[in-house]
Image 1 (tube, helix red, strand yellow):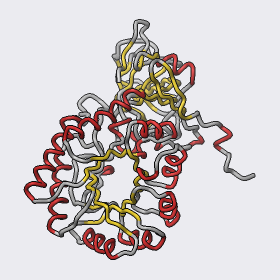
Image 2 (cartoon, one colour):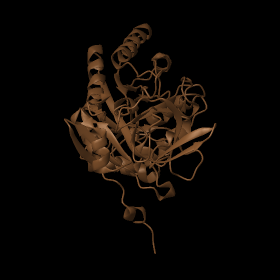
Image 3 (tube, rainbow, N blue to C red):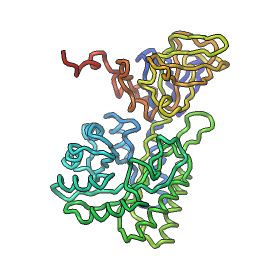
Image 4 (cartoon, one colour):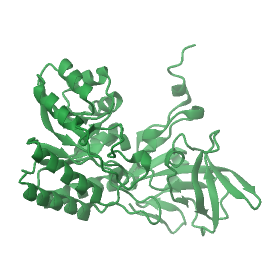
Length: 421
């Protein structure tokens, strides 16, 4: 994605003026570079094609989903993973082939399991021993399942987004025997077919070491226990660049390292390489999205801090409050030098409603200016809430100089549509 200032001093995305977008459609608004989303998907495809292995790429819906996003995923030949009834419903309403949908979740309800079975999803990812009995009970035909393993590997990332460590709510532990018990239960069931295994070590992972280490552990475990599978799903969690110093996962080199390692491990162990799956989400949409805000109150506390408040907040930007995540901000409507350190704050009634703690902005910033917060394409709209009865923002895809609305701004009426009088 190319974000730069044009000759008029206005910030642009792919040549489109973001000032024009903000003035035309209001704020807060999340804007995506559609071409970059497609490019990221194609990069993963090309990297796997070079490996010569059978593979599938499944977009992680939780990062960002809507009807138009699902259609885009389908056009680029990816599969989809969903983790709730709502995500499955959205995917089906978009016309996506259910055979290419994978249903995840550590606590699937009985209704969700029945819905997934009735929809004939490609496979269900089992996350507990009890779930095996539930699926077997409700299935009327043979259903493909994949067992999510807990490999006991700690990835180097924020503790809230680690998922493969021993003490985790996700998966069946290899070390404590739950994984092998799960395999036995599936094989002894009436209607379940063990298609493969799945693991996921965490999110915002910059390197390949944890994934390769886990792949080795899993392949050795499969070999030692004489377990045949059609699929090993490596999960996702590939990193993106939020601020200077962050590393975007090097898709071409990274996938080459992972696939070459798997080929080597398979040769060492004598294990036949099955289909390899991955589930990127953040790495596809994260850097392709930005959020536009309008500046409101500016409050200077002498010798303490300067607060620049915007017309959104933790209702559409929760990651700073949750993870102390860092972001970069740019002034949209003119190209003044960023010569002052400020705190960009939201408008919600929480002291923790902060967008960026130490943001570099021009000292000329004033009410009515527009700000762009970069790399907000993943886990922003999807984690948005109505706290303080805030309306969820609109979302646009930009392509070839044109803005396409993919999600309308939530109306005031919609805030109370389910209320009773």
